[in-house]
Structures are given as C-alpha cells and as structure tokens.
Image (cartoon, rainbow, N blue to C red):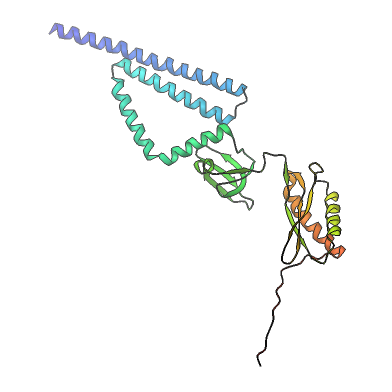
Length: 269
C-alpha cells in the first residue's frame, strides 16, 4: 500500500512538472510567435508591401507557429500528438472538400492581392461586369457600376477570365465613327473634324489624332476619328466631341444621313 502511495505521488509530481512545463511552452511559444509576426510585419512594411498582403501573411505565419506551440505543449503533458495530427489532417481534408468553391475563391484572392492586376479605384471590365473597384477582399471583389450599382464578384471568376483594366495606362484613344452623305466633300469634312479636334485642349497632339475614311457604307461615308486623351478625360471628350461635330456639321451644311428605304407601290390593273 505504501509503495502504491509513493508511486502515485511520483506520478502526480511528474504530471505537475510536465503541466507547468506545458504552460511555460505555450506562454513563451506564443510570445515568440507574436514577436516573429511583429518583426515580419515591420520588414514587409519597410519594403512597402500592400497593407492587405502584410496583414494576411503575418496572420497566417502567426497561426502556423501557434499550432506548433500548442502541439508541443500538449505533447509535454503526455498526449500522443501523432494521432491528433492525423485526426486534424483528416478533418482538414473533409473541410477542404466541403469548401472547395470557397477555397478556390480564397486562393484567387491571394493571387489578386499579391499580383494586383486590379486595385481600388481602377475602372475595369471583368467577369462580364464594368465598373470601379471599391474593395478587394480574400474571397470577393466589389465593383461599383457606372449606374451606381454594387456588384460583388467571387475572386475565382476574376482570375479565370480576362480582366480589362482601363486605368493602368495614362492615356486612352477615343474611337468615333462619323457618317456623312455621299454628296458631301470629304476633304471639307476632314478639315472640319481636324478643326474641332484642335479646339479641344484635352485632346493630345502626341500621339496625333487619326482621321480616315473608314467605310463606304450603304447610306453614308463613314469617317474613323481617333484622338488620344488622358484616361480621366476619356468620357468627357467622347461626349463633347460627338456633340461639337454634330453642331459644326449643321453650321457648315454637312449632312449626317440616316438609313432610307425606297418603297415602290404597284397598282394592278
């Protein structure tokens, strides 16, 4: 009986020592994990890495380190961590299969954050939607359309389709098709268009505007008018130039034709 009591005391004493050691491992390990996260955050911030990327990577590193710390503390108490790791792995696999779509959006979000094909305030066309980027999150990207709708797109759809970013370049070309009558003098029309382009200070001289006879259509001679402007001025130039050319043609007697059909009526005897 006395030997049993002695052995029990030794077991409890050993467990108490291991338990205290496990607590120390957890406390010190967590402090080290926080310290590593803080150092990593400072390094990445100094390198001017995007704040979203910094926050995400630092949190991932911290969680991974904390998992190792917890496993080490549990092992010190005497729990076999090999079976625990196997259970966690199987649970992780099951969760991964159940959340396959969400994980694909998550992975796509990481790619968007790291490579940054789109940024906040960019005007883009992606996944069949055109609008201004308001927010890029881990799972979704939020766009505001020109008519002030909010569209939330899963990131996997963005990365699996073409993305047209209209903001990355400082200049854009305005493409207009202007039709005039076959009876109008095309040299005169070209001169009028050139004059209107020169009046608009937002239109760039380098690269120079292009004015060409684009097509001899059924009802009109179509001119291709392609001036360059700053990206921010694109739509203002597009609308103003269209209106100014119409007014100038009206003043100068240049007609803008519209499709016409001749209807022949036959009266039977």
